[in-house]
Length: 450
Image (cartoon, rainbow, N blue to C red; front, side, top):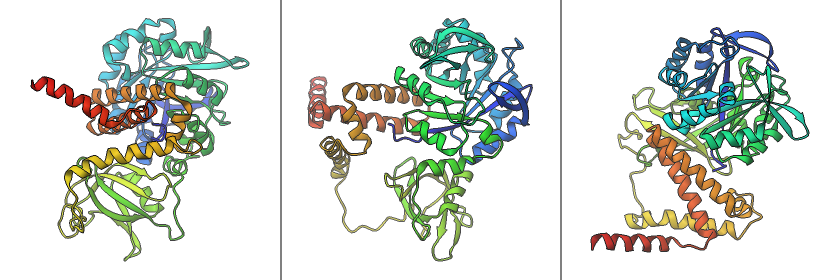
């Protein structure tokens, strides 16, 4: 879904073991140790990390795998590695060193079958097609290889389509004209690529302000990659996430925070968070709240040991409530109960609870269909029509597969929920009732029983 968290991806351009950065691929300056930066960015809430050995290709050598291993051991977030990748054997070595995904750039242009072979062997979700593009005319960008030194005859949009066709699971679009300049992403090119393919697209090159990230995400881009603004502390990733979320803290500075068990989906407690508590939760990956009685920050479980490890932070459509998904290390309630909600006013039937979730969702979808002027994502799907719905169903199906391949149970649950939502939108569009599906399933069940 378009409303899902957009990925913030710091990029480590590594030259002989040190992170470097320049402008338009020139005048490289030493920045820092890659392991230290990797740890820093994970603490700030980065969604993924990209590691490019930027001189491996031009120096015709293999990637420094020992540095990849060090970075992998320092972080838990997904890691994409590229640079000097020429063969399937290279890809295998990088994956064995700890990379979650491998980025192919120059070698893919010179030997396109490498994408096909790698995707077939390791899975589409682990193969990223990254390319460097430079503007050569009105709405025209050419692909450059070998660290931006060699011009090719390939046009960027055509190459993106070819990469998807051959099995790439993701595309990183780096605009050489904007690299390190900080004037903003090349939105026109990136949006053209995103519309031309059905796989996730990541913008790269040119970020200078928080608004640049917002601009690119408003165009339906899956992720935004940046380097110097993070390296020089011009933008803190935690600050950026709060800016993009548009969370509205009221006059007293407190927002209600609903705490949910990430595994069982049970609601555990209701607390309050101010901006400082939210920052702490993002940075420490543990639950922090603001105590209204003591008027101070409160680290859940600091004295009792019943901590809550944060696995996800979401916010509602109006930006005035927080949902904290946690892994419990003990009872949530001070009484010793697993949840603070253990007293009932009305006890509904389990069957009613199961039915009402889908039925309420379908009713909401129908309301959005009847109000196409709404700013809601559902109304947007109906305005775009059948092709957009089918495209989103394809994307969500792919993400279910990726989650399953990664053996990430929670990710699969989230992606199946997204898939079910888009299927319900399609059914509403085609005037298919949930009861029709139930009836068909019942027929099949009866046949098997017979």
